[in-house]
Image (tube, rainbow, N blue to C red; front, side):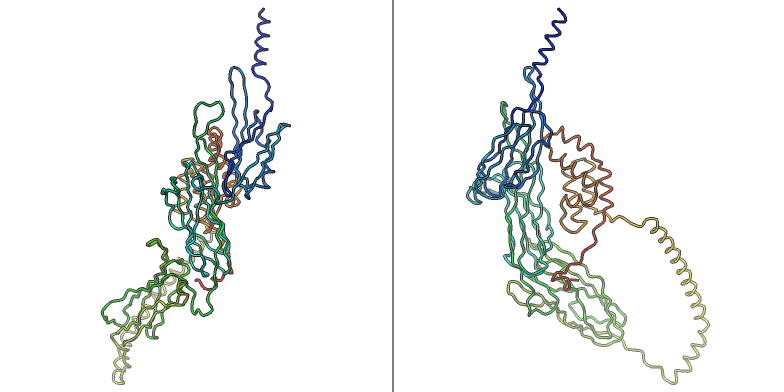
Length: 549
């Protein structure tokens, strides 16, 4: 009797938990129809626990731009009936408008149904129906070589943002740099409220011709309400999304043939100086400090020319290194160059400091103009010492004879001090050679702000913050926009670490994300970033290469 009971229980267990086998494959999209330029999420569900590589999405590359794919698995037991589920979510962006077919997928002999997708022309769908979109604008439709253009991009979000990255526009033949910090606000568009994230970039073209600006892009996750089959309540679900700003073309004009001088194009150029309002007399040998400031609107500090002062032969000039910086004033970028020069007179008299003139090109008037400082007159008191008379010669000779014994001792003291200094210098040079031989390479210093932000993110073990900090730090280190793929190419460990960070940051399930986050060696990542060196600057053969200092 006991054996029979055990047999029945075993039979019930086998029938309650049958062996898993794929019997159904379902494919669906989250939006149909959709507008050209928008993205959709393709969801493929299999009723079995399958390997992630079972789904082949290569057939989608013909008609879609395929984004990242997220995979989740679940197991459900109800009334001793167990079922498995494997879910793929693929982010897709149609390449063109029209009716596009998502082909059927086949796994282990089981196929899904094909899906016919309707993609509408851009502008045919009311904008208030869009949950996320981007707008971009340029300050001018055309510009000159070296002229600063302001590229403004706005990201409109009608859904709650969970995480995301806003990428800079892509272009060649020009310099691009972010201006200031992002602004976060709200706007009402066609009666619907959007959260708006705004970012500004400066673009300076290096060569004439047509400049193609590939619009800025956004990729991330938003929270949407979802209700799965059989569920009683709806819940917030993370949905991957991406969007892109329209491309812009701008015509870049060359330097005008009738322009003379060092090339500088700006909306407004002003020269200022520190100089006393009233006439001042100076003595021979007194240093006269002259500080001249060059200000230019809507240009970069590297485009400002050096200020060279022409002075009479009796005035010696000792210029300091020019100070350059850029700041924002009244929503306009202003470049500043400050040049301080010490002037020392070697003889008395009245001298005229010539007019200072800086040529520049006004793009609004299409003509050359000049920023000037007026000529200055200075008076130096004193005269050159007169030649000694014949009567004074014997007395001078006597003085020389009297004091001749002092100079040899003074010369001897200076010679000894010089020898001691030379020996100390040679000793220090030997020590430096030993240090250099022991450490032939020194890591470039990390940025005090971006590196500290990266280290704080690593200490907190927050993958999303680490990824954003990596992009900002390497962009500042290499002085050019750096994507995560480009950063990964610098080091094999860095490439693997970025892959794990992305998987941990964008994973649908916290149970999948936490093991990935725990296996990341954040200390090694910080050390590799700290030891990173900036790339050697490459010489550019642009139109400004011979013009800018």
